[in-house]
Length: 68
Image: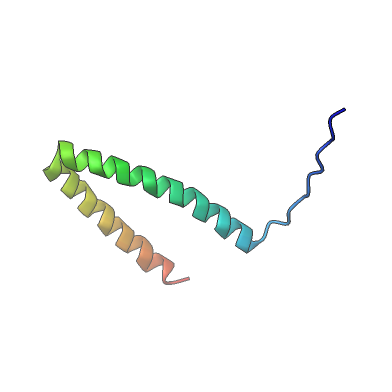
């Protein structure tokens, strides 16, 4: 006879949310780096322009986040 698992209901805290987002972003960043490597090999000029745009947008996000 199989034992039933007891599920513990975890309280959703800020720390829990940050930890989960960190795990997801870590995986996602790894995927982004693989795409970046392929793009730079295939079309270096176009990849550089796209990366410049991404960097500009990141700066805007950082600016807005600093206002929190």
